[in-house]
Length: 272
Image (cartoon, rainbow, N blue to C red; front, top):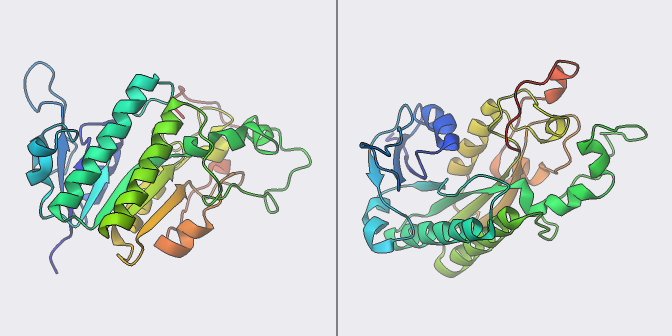
């Protein structure tokens, strides 16, 4: 059986560097990024990547042809910094819309948008979630904790979160209007390594192994799933996000739990 073909946008970024080498063991993975491959401002390609196209996904005429022939597109073409300006966040929305439009015009059926837990970040600023983020677990039981559902209304906590929420809405629009199958993955903390660098990360970490598995589940999910927004977080004892629909609808089975690091000193901090 021929390998599925996957196109990764924003392929010169940090998440792609983490994910592509693992996905390339199962799929034929190509990429597109606006950063050049050679020259003064060149950005490296991740290990295992096949063809890489230089192009800005906001420019449909320049990139549409590069989207043809793929079974799935993974969208990393966003600035990933949480503390960013509204101007940068607007560029993120434009990049997602451009990628969706190029995929739709090219006949791609499965689009995987890399969203964020920050589309629901305001919930975390209320009890009991605020206490958990501070590591204050007294009188709380993780077995009975009312976890935040992906079905609850968007409550972004920043311009970054607003942009991710708007992009999820765009993905739903393309699914319902053009018959695409679009999946939005609301990632937990996934760039700091598997060990927490702060108390908050004991609930928020998505380990590398679970990250790779999550994207494989999104690639392999049936095309009858026309749209879904799912939390992606490891099986942490104190996770605050509900992943029951991620498990049921796309088969996500996270293996790791940050409790194995409890009591160890924190390594250098990373973005959340």
